Image (cartoon, rainbow, N blue to C red; front, top):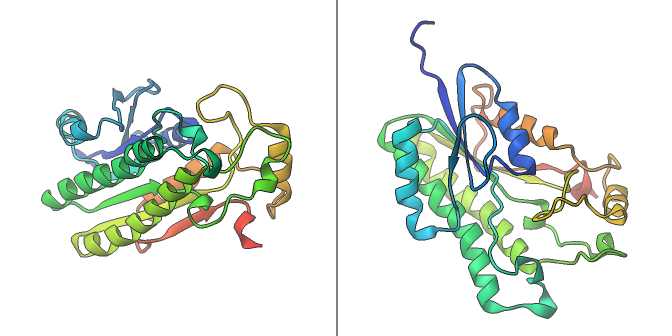
Length: 252
């Protein structure tokens, strides 16, 4: 078909472990997949800092002008500030916890709502996919962290459970306006540790894998494939859902 409009997809956090698999999944010539991140990756890259909350609206408007209004928004970013890894019960610092909740949960809320309003204002149909985690609805099993330096992260649970709630509320509010809004909750994914180039601790991988039905961690591309389906025209009657992809970890 001549002069067919290319589908525009904004991927927030497309330079990360999961983000790259999502970005690479959209290799269709009829799709413009834009990576918005603080680190460069891919052909259609543009600098974007989720933690600058007061400038998010202005920054998004500049992306709309440069690339167009997205048909699909995918937010797989993992914004962190300060000493985020120490947000546990024994070392809880209120200021640190607050700043991380704002940078992550509040940025997800502001970005999703601004994009949704823009899509609706142009009378477009659209899709929004946000990333939560199985730890948005499950407790973090401390046994998985035995013999490692890892432990529970309180703010992570608050943030990820909040994202699931956000998706449900947004889906009902924007549903009659032509938007499908869903959430993806992965379990553990093979790759490096957040904020480090180091791979995951072998004991953690072994212990977590043992508690899954498939006895392994997810491969990043498996997450990307799910995102691609939810973004496609084949997926047209799913909204307000938290799609779990964890190898059966939460089935037990």
